[in-house]
Length: 94
Image 1 (cartoon, rainbow, N blue to C red):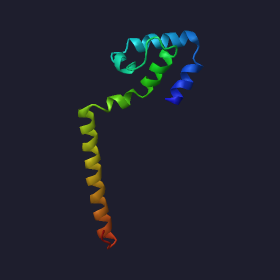
Image 2 (cartoon, helix red, strand yellow):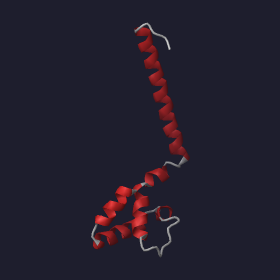
Image 3 (cartoon, rainbow, N blue to C red):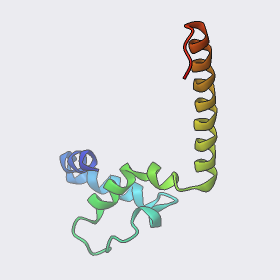
Image 4 (tube, rainbow, N blue to C red):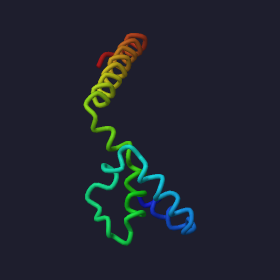
């Protein structure tokens, strides 16, 4: 979020306004602006900062979390088999 804040502040006011407009058109604008008072003088900045971490909000999706857990499980099983093969090859046991 800090990087987003720095980047936003380096934009010209014209570009900031264009970015703010684009963000208000985002389908999940309500999520991005949740908890930020619309009369906040830094409203655009704060929404921009939230948009920088929007994928974190998406991670809350149950389907996505289950997919990630499945990938981790498969990777763990693969790594476990790799360790077993390596330990047999070198005559070690764990």
